[in-house]
Image (cartoon, rainbow, N blue to C red; front, side, top):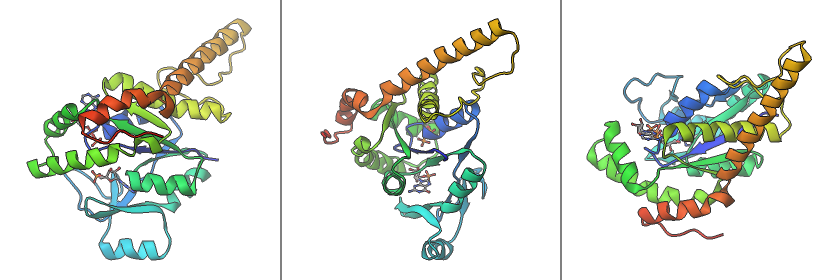
Length: 253
Ligand code: ADP
Ligand code: 5GP
């Protein structure tokens, strides 16, 4: 069974940056390319970042029940095609969905085993700075994104893991740890990690073999403990000041 990872974040938190870093480090993971009715931006290519379709095409896909989930975000349709999950399962890979909070709730309902990760900026000022510094959006869009961020952040407690994207390198390591810890916990053969190949190797020399498996155990323990610290229950205290910086309601449950 493939593991489905859901990643959501308020726009500008650094989700695309972190997901790109993740794909450099973890193998056997596919990115689900969504369908959308919004026009392509900048250098985006059809079939790479998204499949860009018309309203009529999107609505006929809804009618044919082709979506695992779909939602209206910033006035446009976005949806995850069921075929992506089927194809990932055939390849024995895992699948990462970059979707909004509405889509995440739909997927969790249909696939309760899916692993959901919410990425937060360190605070409102840093989010505003990142949105401006990215230089993609006009002022009114930045205002709207900041306003939407407050409402999205209030949904953090519906996610399994919380990742506060402060220092990029550390956050990328945390995202990798969450993905690999779930594989380890689900009894997978430990996958290959670029830079630290910790999968089983065919080394005949017993001494090296033991050193290799000890190194693997140490790395697995490190990944599990980083992931554990990102679990919702461990992260609640870290989230309260972030919520406060957005003027969002404190969430208790
Ligand atoms: P999102 O996909 O969540 O909308 P991006 O990945 O486009 O966000 O990141 C928004 C901006 O913030 C980009 O300019 C990116 O380079 C920058 N950024 C991402 N992560 C960090 C970080 N940890 N520290 C500082 N800047 C960051
Ligand atoms: P953008 O237009 O900036 O690429 O994405 C806007 C928002 O739509 C982001 O929050 C992104 O995660 C979300 N999104 C992208 N694809 C999908 C999808 O297939 N389903 C849902 N529900 N949201 C999506």
